[in-house]
Amino acid sequence: MTVVERVQDEIKKAMKNREQTRLDCLRMVKGALLLKEKETGREVTDDQAVPVLRSEVRKRQDTVELLMGLGKLAEADAARREIAVIEEFLPRQLSPEELEARVHAYLAEHPETDNPGKLTGAMKKELGDLADGKMLNEVCRKVLNG
Image 1 (cartoon, one colour):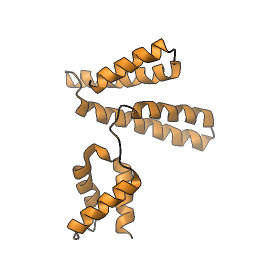
Image 2 (cartoon, rainbow, N blue to C red):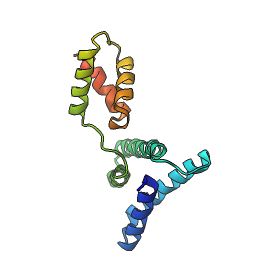
Image 3 (cartoon, one colour):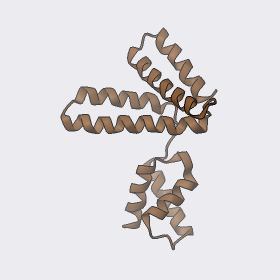
Image 4 (cartoon, rainbow, N blue to C red):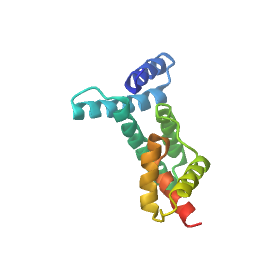
C-alpha cells in the first residue's frame, strides 16, 4: 500500500471514529500530496511523498518553536500531535546515538574527512531517508569537534 493510499485509509478510519483533530491533520497531508501530484502531473510515488511529508513535519516543528517562544503551550501541543500523525507515514529515523555510531564507522573508513559539511553530505548519501538532515549535521559537527 502506497503512502497516499495509507493516508486515504486513515482518513476513513478517523471519520468513522470521529477523531476530528486527526482527520483535519490527515486532510492537510492529503492536500500537500495532491499539490505535489498536480506539480508533477502524475501520481505521487512513495519516494516523492516522503520529502513532502518531511516538509510538513518541518513546518510544524517551526510552528512549535514559534508558539513556545510566544508562550502558547496549548497550540504548540496541538502542532506536536500533528507531527506525530504525519510521522506515522514516514520511514523510521535513526536515533542520535545510532547516527553517531554510523558517523564514527564512516570516519574510521575515511579518516581524511574533516569538514562537517562534506561529512554530512556523504552520510546523507549513505543513509538516505534514515536520518534527518538537521540532526545529522549536528551529530557530524559534534563528532568532528570532539
